[in-house]
Image 1 (cartoon, one colour):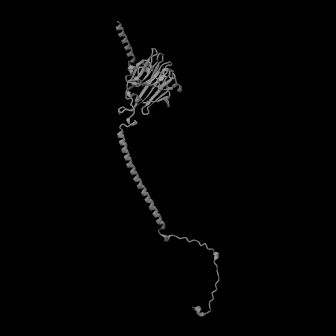
Image 2 (image 1 turned 180 degrees about the vertical axis):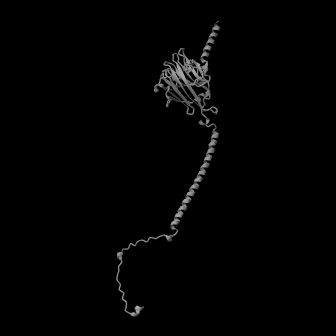
Image 3 (image 1 turned 135 degrees about the horizontal axis):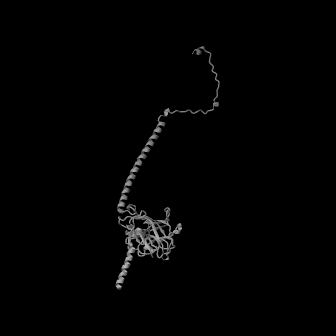
Length: 348
């Protein structure tokens, strides 16, 4: 009888566990990406137009909306050209009811995470490897929370490596109103940025939080999943998702700072240098010919000009210089000439 009771108890525990970790496909909705799964307490509400992650009627509720399609980050030290650098951009609209609780988290986890999803700590308490952007509405001094209204970056621990106070932009995460968040990761700069605004507001130019991290080095080409997770502890906090889009961007290899084949790249550079030298020599020769031709034309012009000036000296007009002697220096005298009266002389 005791053995039968133990067997029944074991079966009951397994059924509860399976009911908690089983997934339900999300029907097609224009505001959500396809191939999404509902895990834990997550369920559709409002005629399947939004997703409620936590159930305020149950204790220690948690729920997860996760993409079923895996992807890989490229390690900066990877030698596999088939694995290309991966960046991502995502935005989602959510609301958190005005109660204490863990809030919401965007999580990146290993492909087998669904079987490890738990009831608390954004469902991450049983997962040792994860990356998360938390929108935390409780102040947990055990993990160093500064207040109950912050955004934090979590790397394999709920103790945030960087935190930003949401009150600095005049918002409250658990106000019950809709909020819009954008999270972008660029693999080339290894920079993650988080933005937040009220629903209907424009995308902020300046990020609320920016953090340098190499997700490729963290995951090293491992298949991962991305999801939106929420847990509320013992409170009655309710978290809802109204839309979610996630885009993976794969950069071509030629954009990466390290060439695919360094030897071929060096050979190509050498060939380019030789071609550049040949082009430079041809340009210098052409410039020399143009300069010599110009000098010859200039010399011919000078010779022709000098010949025109000095060739016929006898035809050069000479302008007499006006005498500068004073007229008063000349003296006039009257000279008398006496002729003898001789008829013969006169006749001659």
